[in-house]
Image 1 (cartoon, rainbow, N blue to C red):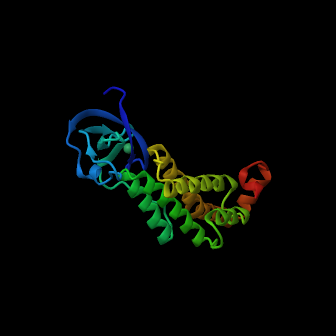
Image 2 (cartoon, helix red, strand yellow):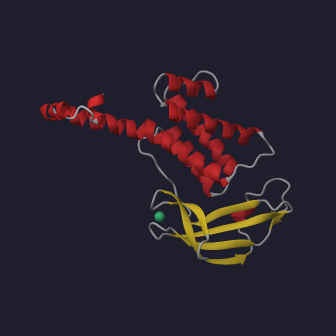
Image 3 (spheres, rainbow, N blue to C red):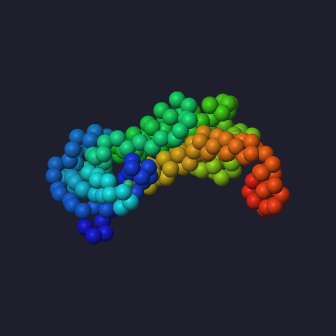
Length: 230
Ligand SMILES: [Zn+2]
């Protein structure tokens, strides 16, 4: 077991970690995996149950994985802890609901549904920020052009949109766990930027403005400090 790991979201650390596997047993696959079976798959081979630990906080996890019959497609789920949601403060309800939905799909191994929910979350962000016209691509461009999201975030959002398009329209495609992890991470970064960090930065700047003369004398002494550029 020395170097074996499974990736999973650690609620204690609030991020996806490489969980170190300490023990593994083989047994019949659980209902959670049968519920995920794609059309055309008849069943599952024996499942591997892993007891794993977060390397950062020591939290314990029970992970299960099995392949299907007849196509040997991989399926997996985290059986414990059951609820492991990341939250971003200050989200409007539709944004929060779709973001939690994306994570819920990820937790149960439904990676296609996960990236589609990530896309819905982006749509909710566009609607909240008032970009309602045209395709999602056009709405994201509107947000970029009006300065509501930075160029780099726009790039991430647009790539997420394309992954979700594939998931929604291409019957042959299977979304990998890595793509689903990255999609949730990118959406989280966008939400943090749009709803949490921007507000915190405005509060931060307002606090510094309140300080008055002390703030201005610092600026005069340190012309290259970030606060002096704005
Ligand atoms: Zn942890």
